Image 1 (cartoon, rainbow, N blue to C red):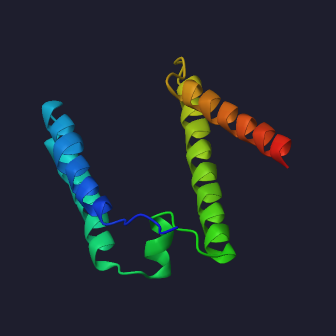
Image 2: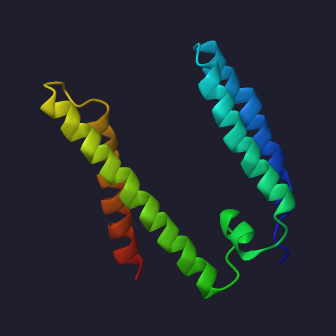
Length: 127
């Protein structure tokens, strides 16, 4: 079965950058932040257009042709999860130390923990 084309992703990145992210930031008075996000999403779109079929480009698009790409993707997701949850925990602890409630950080930590535990249970049941 032929895999679907990924040519729509650069257009989607630009649509998200211009239509949603920049417009929302500008509406909230954060035009400079919106311009930065537009630049980041636009860079991804440009990378996707010019990237060709290299391994990194395929990995960023979620294609898994072999075990090596799948392993690299797993390592990247694991690293991103570790960095994100560590950042949330530190932000939560800082808020608690300042005498605040810790919101919304503890909710995000709870969602991350539940997602991890749920995925672990499902993976164990399937294997």
